[in-house]
Image (cartoon, rainbow, N blue to C red):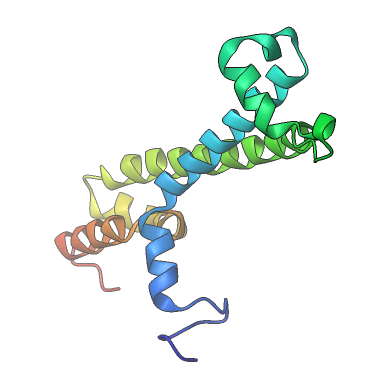
Length: 145
């Protein structure tokens, strides 16, 4: 495939590396967009719609009175969905990060070897820098990988 090596996922290697590196910031952006859409939807269907920032935003998003489209209903449907996805992505990353940090504090080789399968599974959800730390810890305990 042109553009770099790819695996069975069909994504070029550079794209997969970029997504792994910036997984948490992207998840935070998805969460923020979901929150913003939910706030806009709530404001458009509540008395808050007449208060300053929301009345101006509603003027542009609700064009139904001027022969256009009302996007506020789309915000009410899509906003919570994006919010839930963003919350899941952020939560999954933070749980994986916490567990990985806990497992990396292993002081004994036996404990480290016992936790290897779980650590390797967690590395799929974390950044390449975490993989480097994992390899350094393997070298410290003289574990072949």
